[in-house]
Length: 292
Image 1 (cartoon, rainbow, N blue to C red):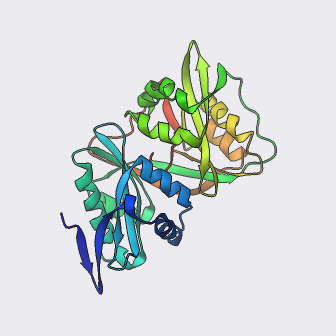
Image 2 (cartoon, rainbow, N blue to C red; image 1 turned 180 degrees about the horizontal axis):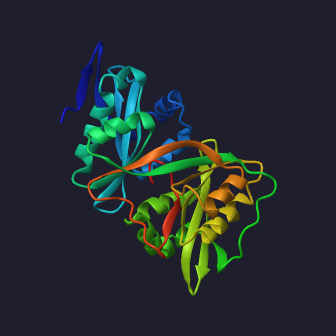
Image 3 (cartoon, rainbow, N blue to C red; image 1 turned 45 degrees about the vertical axis):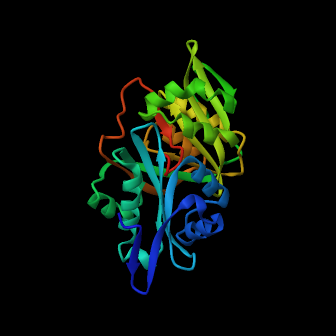
């Protein structure tokens, strides 16, 4: 695999993203309008691996990361190219570097509309739409349905108690990812019938707060697991990424001031990623576009 690529007037080298100045990565994401903070980049580098496209004097022109979630699956994210290299095949070259690192893992990602064609040409197939809902939470939240069970706070040390539930919903064991996300998060679990049937996290991200991951068995449970965080965030900017297009949960988010700001497309390569089953837990709120 070529670790460098020669473009008109300059050459780019694939450098381990862990060794790149976070200020340069932050500037790269700002340049394409992404809301990642330097702190978000630091967390993503702890969770995953990847490369940056760097020229001979240390300037960063692109990035691509992958996040191991179990032994045979990974999500791909933070694939960024500046306009200067995008039109010259820089995105494809970055993805080829990631493929080499991922080996024979099954893969999934959330593609922006301009990038869908590239990913399709690399063997990814479309599975679902993700609705990025965001906005300022109003002073009063809409009414919620009757609570079936009991809501309780969890600490980061309690992540093991939701691991099996999350694996059933997500389809892969992402316990290591959850443990890192939990470090600075508020975590709530829904208990019913002697066990945990749903959970949600809320943490600082981008412009404000991100509610996710959120795992629940139905819309009613999902509403409560979102509301428990939103009630403490009135007047603040909040984001929820969800694949739900309609239903009670979506109506609750809309009435809570979270409108669709953007959509991306979940795509997979290898084994199909999303397999929703009736009466089984489901990921109502994503951990983020890169982590899915």
